[in-house]
Each structure stands twice: as C-alpha cells, then as structure tokens.
Length: 151
Image 1 (cartoon, helix red, strand yellow):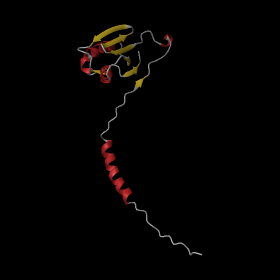
Image 2 (tube, helix red, strand yellow):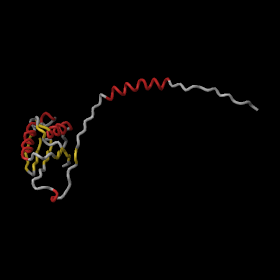
Image 3 (cartoon, helix red, strand yellow):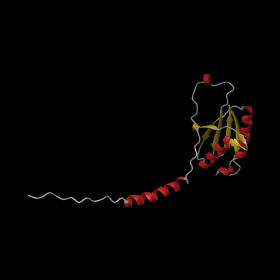
Image 4 (cartoon, rainbow, N blue to C red):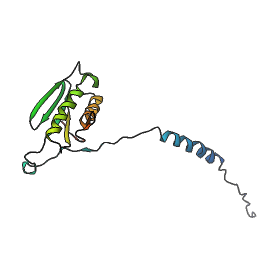
C-alpha cells in the first residue's frame, strides 16, 4: 500500500498574460481614433395609394446614368448630360444639378425628399457625389432625406 500522495502547489504564471494586455491596450487605443464612421439616414421609397398623396406634393427623383443625370420633378424631365466621357465623378455636371435642385427647392420650400435611381454601371464615387450634391449646393440645404430605388 502506498502512502498519501504529495502534490506540490505551483503558482500560476500571469506574466505572459500581463505582457499581452500591456501591449494590446495601447494598440487598441491608438487604432480606435484612426477609424471614422459616417452614417447617413436613408429611407425606403414610399409605397401607397394615390389617396395618400397630396395634390401639390413633390415627387422628385434623380436618375444617374452612364450618359448623364436626369432630374424628374412630378413627371417633368430635365436632362444634364455629362461634360466629357462619363467615366468618373468629375465628368458629371453636379453644379448644373445643384442649380436645377435649387430651383425645385424654391418652388417647394418644405420638400426634403428625393429618390436616387442609379442605373447601369455607374461608378460608386458618382453615386456618392450625387448624394452630396442633392443634400447641399453652395450654402443652401436642398434635399437631405434620400431614398434609393432600382429601375
């Protein structure tokens, strides 16, 4: 018969864990300030009957195509062709868009909604530039509430 077994107590070595935390905390603090996140509130296009629409309500849409921009205001179409080859955001007429939307805003001062309809293979940077152009032109606030729709 054997005697009682003697177990030696070993202390837990926490030094590697403390070293890891000492390195990770400053690293996480430094990288957290490098990431900035911007959020835009986007709405879904409204679905309803004609009874729910007011007679003088503005139905405004911006169609972004590979040939240019098209503003549709209550069925009236305004074409803004590209300044050059429509390859990137610099070739689209966003200043003309701002002027057209400023006129629409002057006719409908309480309107804030616009539906953006990208079609074809429009680059993402063009869509973002169009969103910026519809929200503000020069110092005027235009249509900050956007909804996206497919064609």
